[in-house]
Image 1 (cartoon, one colour):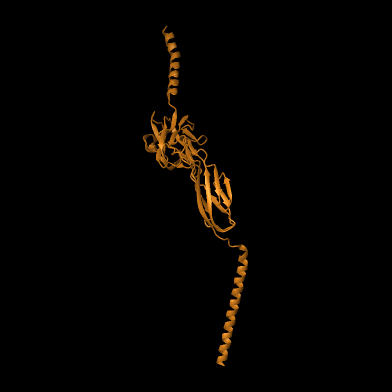
Image 2 (image 1 turned 30 degrees about the vertical axis):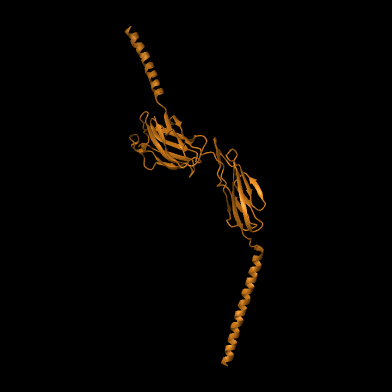
Length: 325
């Protein structure tokens, strides 16, 4: 009977231990990369804030790499730096010169790549984070530079440059990613604003002039931005045209002062149009055809004056000799 009980224990015990091991593995939280704070709202144009990229519940971490992305037309990253986690107890040793933050491929707006290589020394030993504790990877300072009718995100780029977590066995660790959201305040309902410049600033007639309306601003309504779809030009010389892009080329056939008018159209805005008139002074063109004749005349005059000068000097020498005799 005792033998049967001992045998039964020997059979059941491994199963219990195995089940306990499975439960323990399943209870191990998945490593998570996240943005803190998770949500930022009620921001106006020009407001600033700091977002921190955090990491928690990691095990046997050796190397990490992450590419952070955002919409540069809404928020602009003005500064970035490693979090103080590099000096925390978890990361006691860091291989010198092996960490960096950079804009991938150069100064690409809306994208930042952060990497830490060999977080421990020697690099074949990983580090574990305290369960449930978040550690700072990267801090980013932002400024609100635009509006959006819906929230914008600070997120993590998809593979292969999204992230990968390498442990001491050079294996990727499973990881979850939680982006942060940023809400910006929409301005009051309003129409577009027309604005334009031209080059050259003092043009000649019969010369191409580039009119540029990229400084014009869109309109707004309750749902968001209303972009400009039409640029309606009246150049003041009887020529009118409508285009969908902000630049256009025109020339005036005669010199004069002209009233150039731009009307921008943003459907859905209140109001939908705005108009601006500026005076452009066109000076007479200096005809290239007369340059050569003028140069020839000036050359001829120079030759004649030179001969007259030589002749006058010679006559003076002759008179002086006659007086001497």
